[in-house]
Image (cartoon, rainbow, N blue to C red; front, side, top):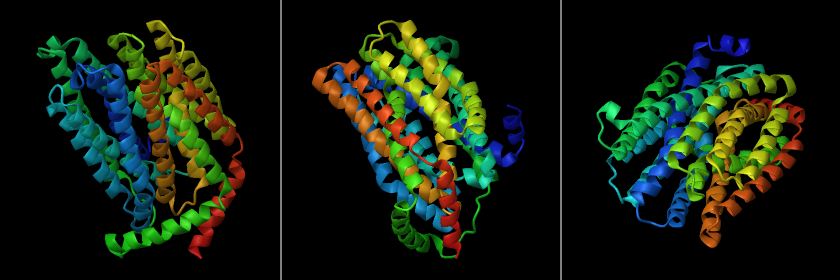
Length: 433
């Protein structure tokens, strides 16, 4: 913990980590919390629960598909001209505007609500490509685990703090001079947009990118990006550790993202009360805040791969149990269990991948990393949507998550991290020749 405190004294680390503090409000309040609840009860009022679940799953998959197509090219383009901060700012602004637009969408306008969600998800996911790729610019390799954990930890803190305020706004609207819960939720979406914008500014002002911006300009960088991207596809065949890790990550992050995005909808579908589900999400946030820091220390001591495998084992047990829960207290217990490992799995995955990629092309490789993360998120929500439509039983859909986790763990076990780090160094050296 002393190491984390010392690293936070670095203004670049602090500014970089604050972006996680900023955009996690979208992940918590919009993606995981209020949007699924509000979509089902307000924008899709009077519609069968299985239909609204299918619509939500399809919209999430559509956003992920767009990021899937764009991510590798965007990463290569950002590296070619050192445009990482520029693209991060543009995508973050798209997410901020899309989130603010949810305030203005009236009851029953489910299609407009889904358009707002899709644009918000594109902004959120696109900005994360460049945010993740800035990690090698702000700290040394030996600090990747700790700094990555600081980011996720502050993310859970920031997302949890604003979400707690917004939950209070929902449960006690009269304290704020608001007459109804619907207005409170709409104001919550607006608060996320403001929060995201304000806490993004330190990164945009203080973080310095490594590498020199080439004088070829954006069009020339685009042409160079295509050339480098083709080369990277060829190079991936040689970087066995990177390829194996990306496939493993694709499988297990599918399960993790699906649980985050669909947990509230799942709880509503099996008859749990909405207020209790919101409380469970708050539990996850505040347990994840210190737990992510602990995983940063754990990753430094036993290695990030071992730390990820421990976290995924907890996910397997929790996902299996989720298919059989009957009471709210069980949902709370599951929320606490997920909170213990969620930030750790995410932060150690990011820091492990940063070790495996050539240091001169981080955004390009993180484009693939985020591409597969979003490609995975296509199938998770679609699996829930299709299974819900075919069986009308969300518990069956939940059981499939365990298979994805186990497959991802098996492949991750096979990743040779030391060999991968050596290959990354050799690749970076060859590209400079």
